[in-house]
Structures are given as structure tokens and as C-alpha cells.
Image 1 (cartoon, helix red, strand yellow):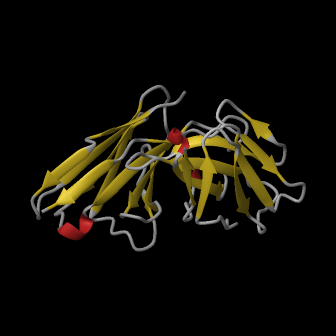
Image 2 (cartoon, each protein chain N blue to C red):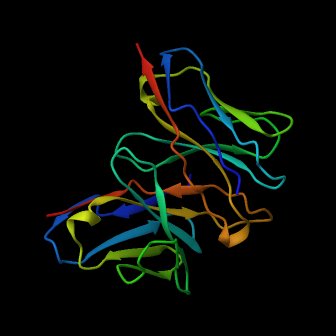
Length: 119
Length: 112
């Protein structure tokens, strides 16, 4: 089945640094990818929708200058957390949807997430 | 956008069927019902989806009521590895704007 790979799976860095997370669709081309964030004991919250070749669409309350998204190819989207601070510590999960055929009901597949800890 | 309501937690004995309910009374005619699960510290795993007919795959069965206002995910023989949070989601929008919005899900605990 469709596989989404996310890297790194775990990162610890100092406050003020920038961290890049990669999301790859391994066996399909994804024109659309999604980035979610999950805090402990909470559900997934959609941050932004990434479309190949165009600007990402951010959900309300998500700072686009803080969370930079690049979707330069059909198999790769990146999320960069700029000038990260302890409150940005979270579990970040990407997702990609198999391109629609006649119907827009293809499932999304998720990566295994990146646990980000800012000291 | 249709919202879903699920019980916060359920228990199931290993080997028995786990029946997870979901209410989506405001679902519209062209919205699909999706089920995902999330095992601790992993990304969500797709299980099954359907529009109005019952669906079955190697993981589970999905039963959707005739009025489509509720559905039930059935794991026919639950194992300890099925312990996870199960999310019932109604697909929002259509085409490239379509996205999955997660609720709080049901925490299923499978016990010996």
C-alpha cells in the first residue's frame, strides 16, 4: 500500500534554532500533502495544506512565517520550524493523499511523525 | 462541515469483536466516513472508509446506517495490538481542498 516516510523521527535542539522535517511519498506522487501537530494527550490539529508548485494554505492561528512549508516536487514536502522555542515542542505528522481518480475519496496516508523537543 | 461524536473510551477482551460507534448526524450526501487509528507515538493508520454501503477489508468492517447518521467500525477478533485511539472522520470538502479533521476519538483498550 501507499507509504509516507517522515524524517527525522526524533530531534532535540536548542531554542532559537531552525528545524527542517521532511515528508516523502515513497510509491506514489502526491500533489497535496498535509501537516499536523499533536500535543500530548490531544488530537491531531491540521496546520497547513501543501500543494505542489504553489503556496501552502495555513489553518487559522498558524503562523506561516514560523512554519515554512515547501512542496517542490510531487514526492517531497518539507516543514521548517523557524527560531524554535520550547512551546513549539510537539509531535509533527505529515500526510499525503493518493491523487484522485474519478472520485475525490482516496484515503490519506500518514507518516510516523517527528517528535520535536526544544530545550 | 459534518462533526462526529464518539465515546471517549472502550474496553474489549482479546479475541472478541470490538464494535466502535460513531455518530455523524449532520453528514451530507457526498461525504465519506473514514476510520483511522493511532497507536501510541505513531502516525495515524488508515483502516477503512465508506459512503453508504457496508464495507469490509482485511482489517475491519464498516457498517453505515441507512440514514447515514451513524456508523460502526467492527474489529472481528481484537488482539492486544489493536489497542489504540480510533478516529471516525467525515471527509470535508472535495477535490484538492478536501482534508481530514480529527476529533478526540475513542481510546480502545484490548485486555487479556
